[in-house]
Image (cartoon, rainbow, N blue to C red; front, side, top):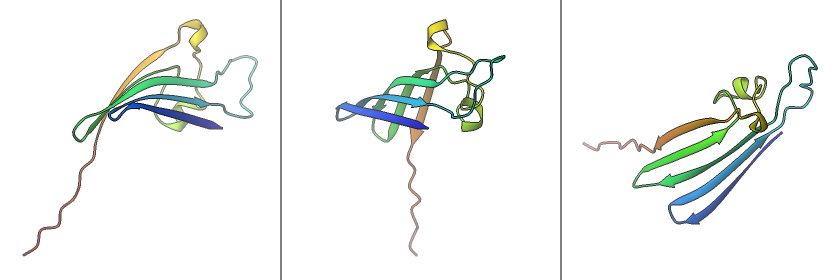
Length: 94
């Protein structure tokens, strides 16, 4: 189960949060933790820059949902930085 929240405080900047909990993942020998992330998103002319702090170890679901061995309480915080760009394919007319 996952959820996210985005609060746009200016026309080009947002604060984002996410939380994920995996059901049925309990192991007494290897503790797993829920994923919690917080960050900021800034939109510029065509680019979106995202800076996140999270305890997730990867970007894909198979990495962070089943392998979350770090927690915020023990300093297991990671920094991520993403740049997104929207490209439009233009069909040329003859």
